[in-house]
Every structure is written in structure tokens, then in C-alpha cells.
Image (cartoon, rainbow, N blue to C red):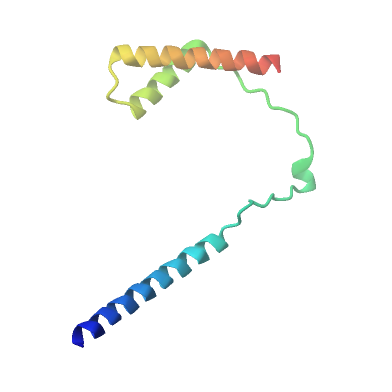
Length: 103
């Protein structure tokens, strides 16, 4: 008799915790919009602006910046791997620049 009471209380506690968890999950799901709403642009923000001409980096400046970023982000890279990574990044940048100029 006592074991039946203990088992029933355990089942009630399990059911209560499951219901509480599901309600919290459902509340979190309902709080987030499924489709993000687009913000309306103000008339000043929607007006076309002239593109600002940024001074282009030279290859050496770009190479130095990439090398510093690699040293900071991946300090475990050896000199050969770092050099290969820099060359691949530079090549990808040149290819992307060509694609952008074609568009």
C-alpha cells in the first residue's frame, strides 16, 4: 500500500515537471516570431545615398592586416600554414573583387 502511494506521488511529480517544462518551452516558442518582421524605413533612410569612396588598401597593407588577424585568431598556426592561409585569403579576395566588378 505504501509503495503504491510512493509510486503514484512519483508519477504525479514527473507529470507536473513535464507539464511545467512544456509550458515554458511553448511560451518561449510563442514569444519568438516565426517570420521576422521587416522594419519600415523612414523616408530619409530610404532615400538613395551616394556611395562613399573608401581608399583602397594596398596588397602589403591587406597582407599585414590578414597576418595580424591570423596571429590573433589562430596562434597555433606555424609559419608555413600561416603563409598558405594568407595566400588563399588574398586569392579569394581577388576573385571576389573580379566577380563584383563584373556585376
